[in-house]
Structures are given as C-alpha cells and as structure tokens.
Image 1 (cartoon, rainbow, N blue to C red):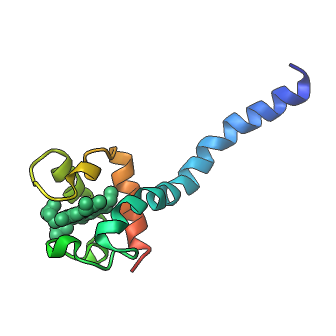
Image 2 (image 1 turned 90 degrees about the vertical axis):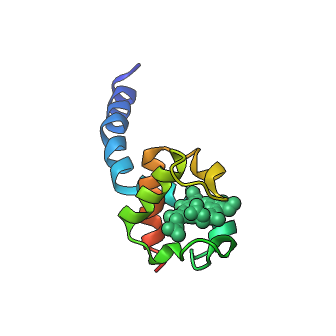
Length: 102
Ligand code: HEC
C-alpha cells in the first residue's frame, strides 16, 4: 500500500462516521418508511386499515414508543409484521423522517 492509498483510506475511515451521523438517519428513515406507506399513506396521512391514528400527527417519541410496543407484542396490530423487523435505530430514523412529512 503506497502513501496515497494509505492517506485516502484513513481519510475515509475518519470521515465516514461523521457522514453517517449527519446524513444517514433521514436517508435510512426514508427507506424504512417505504414499507409503512402502503398502509399509512405516502405522506403518513392515512389511518391504516381505518384503525390507526394519522401517524404524521404524532410526535417522534410517540412513534418510537408505538413501534417498540408493537415489536414487543404489547400491542397487537395489522402492521406488526413490518414493525417487528425494525431495529431501534430504524425506529428512531423512521420517526424522524415522518416529522419531515408534516
Ligand atoms: C400492513 C399494514 C401496516 C404497515 C406496513 C405498517 N403499519 Fe403501522 N399500523 C397499522 C395498523 C392497522 C395500526 C393500528 C393497529 C395498532 O395499533 O397497531 C398501526 C399502528 C401504527 C402506529 C400507532 C398509531 C396509533 O394509533 O397510535 C404507528 C406509530 C405506526 N403504526 C407506525 C408505522 C410505521 C412507522 C410503519 C413502517 C415501519 C408501519 N406502521 C407499518 C398498519 C400498518
């Protein structure tokens, strides 16, 4: 490995965590939200199965708590299959993304 590739590799290693912190939350949230849109609407504007509240009206923390409760099986609902596959980071990211749809 020559000097320049060592240099660019370390630049990459140093810069990527910062990039992830700055950008990936909303990007990941947008990606995750595609799975929610079919029930909750493209802009989170629908009541899923006419049962749920309009989730874009919920606060970020309310969404994260709702997702955790459904993943844990404390609340049983039609969307639990998708919710059970989310990591806690995914939940935070998608909740943050939904705030951008208001
Ligand atoms: C297959 C349809 C479906 C999918 C996909 C789905 N949901 Fe749901 N969701 C529902 C239904 C039905 C309810 C109401 C029943 C319940 O309380 O779980 C609900 C409830 C919720 C609630 C609680 C709303 C309330 O009334 O308090 C939140 C928040 C939520 N969903 C977010 C999401 C997010 C974020 C995603 C994507 C990761 C998602 N849902 C994917 C059908 C779905």
